Image (cartoon, rainbow, N blue to C red):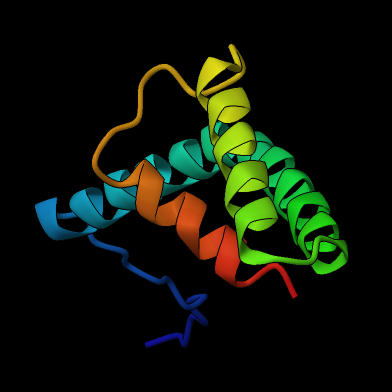
Amino acid sequence: MPEVEIKEVTVVARPGSARRNEYRKYERLISNVKRVYPYALMVRERLNKVNEDLKNITGEKGRKEYIKNIEKDVFADQKRPDRLTRKRPSILIFFLYNQG
């Protein structure tokens, strides 16, 4: 009998439902991050400005007044995200706490 060399073949199973679900979760996370990241940058910039301004304000009454005015501006701002799902606020907070 003659010898024939056969190349190695790798058999890969079709993605099962568990792998598909993991992929869907990953895609959803990426989508949420893409929607939240611009807002995180905007909020981080505003938060840094507020912290710098609060360092310069002396007196508790002046600080409270300044914070109240900032709150009014933030809630009147039209650039707020319209639709935040359950996961997006947690991603936004993650970005703010880990801004470095």
